[in-house]
Image (cartoon, rainbow, N blue to C red; front, side):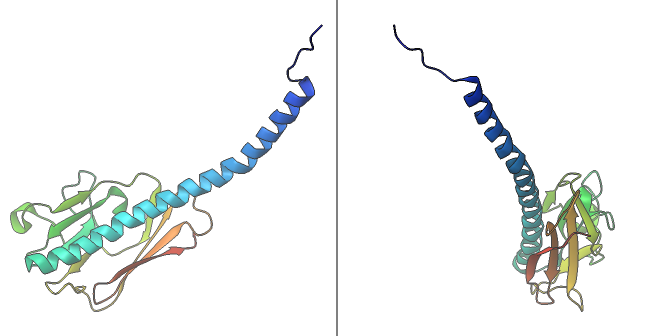
Length: 172
């Protein structure tokens, strides 16, 4: 008579209990990791937009600006960076985009999703033909994600010389 091999009910219950414990620990950590990655991706997009604006201003020898976009991504919308942002040559240096005055948009970034909130930001950021910030002072842009916990916020700084930096920031 041969002996049957298999799992006993107790072995199955122990395995399931261990799996449930691992899931209970792993899911919150995975959620936090996803939120941090999402925040970093939004930060990288905004830093890329600001750096591209600076380099385009030097290359084109004309002021270039980044502004908060309206919902249709066709005009600037003061203080509403959640809709995305526009990159354009600001020929008339008014900080607003108009096709007739400024020519075609250089680049459009769509809304990063309902997850990002911009807490404090200027209406626009403009760089001069020398790649410097067209402002007497350093600029700050502070963002955070919905359901932000810990250090998932981001603080952007643009110096007068045009250098863009980003750092983690505490949630509000």
